[in-house]
Image 1: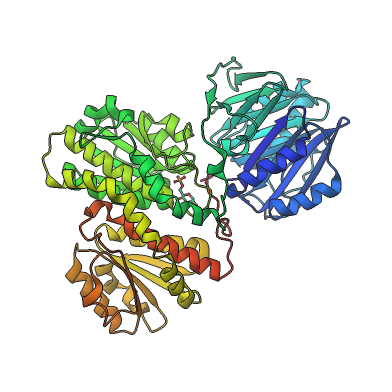
Image 2 (image 1 turned 180 degrees about the horizontal axis):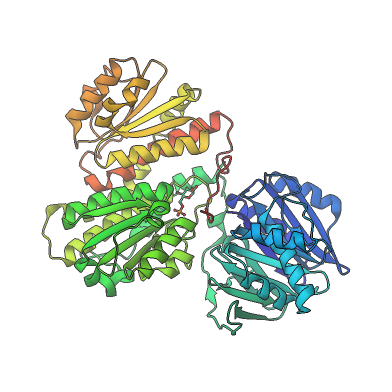
Length: 612
Ligand code: G6P
């Protein structure tokens, strides 16, 4: 959460900062701000709201200078307001700071500073940090870089920060602990950012800072040190190949719609090169294959949409490997006394690879001696680097806050993982062969589903004013129902619940009346049972929408709307959520658009949740 960008070079910093913030806005959009150094003075513009608001104010202030920092905020400490917007100053306005994360010991630090006579302007933990850096600077008489380093030694919590000092107009200092930070390098320019998307149009040479590291940057050069030991750290530079159109809307009204339509290709990219001679090949876990097979227990941990994919993954792994798999929310896993150890495998699923809880769950599993396996989309992200082995999703950048193509790629990868392990274990099962065959037809099937868009739009028009929705499915369609409900909640603010269809009788059925739309996901698996569930809703006046892989002729008389995915009845059960989730994505998309909601940046949410 929160996007941060820093620039030092020869160009007008404000232009580069605003451009970067636009790309980072998916990380938070409660407020935005920039600060530049001009004639040995810090000039700041910040305001509540989105980057477009900031732009108007920046133009008024006529920022100059070729060094600056910028921030887009997802509020944690302190309400979204002009005053709480970043960058923050110390009292003397010598330093300026942008921060992503949470300073956990900000209360004792604040009390300490107050006793020393420091007064505070904002409600943020970030201001405490910059005041503390300034205090250390004065007390220890250390230079800019060393003051930041010494202050950070006393800080507990998560941070990605960039700091400027008005008397050092050729220096940026950045540091990371728990929150992502990358450095972009080109000959006479340096960039700091929460992710590569903000610097890609300027440079493709990237350094990834690790936790506990601090960097000093000027136009020509940089030095990285470890915060605690003060030792110099050397690092490899990575070349990013991704093309710019991957992070642009390319004619679509929203990133979310673009990403829904990208799925025939993103799925293919996830599979590409990984199926040879009817066998799945997963290079990223090859060395650890036997350890995974020998493990006593498998945990999968994730948050949000990735957790739904994890549920689907657990079903297919259990089905093929006949081994129990436990799925846990990372936020629970990390604090519970989970019985894991060297005989456990912990699989972490994360689109961003930066979700704080999932990252902490991985660290915990590493400490307990478990083998950790990451299923991650963002190459080089923290979870990718923290895990022992992994499988990249290769779905391409996902910018819309509501996850779509990442979910379907996760389901593909989990299928491939199960198929790979089953084959290595010598398991013979026709499901393996059939599922591998079906992997190849997914792209084409999705293209067909996208042709149902108009039909789904018409259903959305009918139900966009509903106050509640229920999503029901059995087996693999239960986690899919959860995902459908989450999509609707996230972007249209309609209350929605996903349930196993049979569980409806144990509570949600009480909610059903003629105002309640109920989405059923119908597949051949458990078909007759779900028909009964549909009847039960019908008998209570609920409005029934079905997404079905089964020919709907038997259901036409008692359902209100049919979304029929033709020629897919025989798709492998474990891959079916990929097909059925796409109409659900489109349904929530169109409902949200009809309601006038901000689809790509829904209220209160952020794409990458780097706080707990
Ligand atoms: C946020 C996003 C969700 C995402 C979840 C987990 O809540 O809005 O779309 O599913 O984080 O993110 P991850 O990057 O770990 O998959």
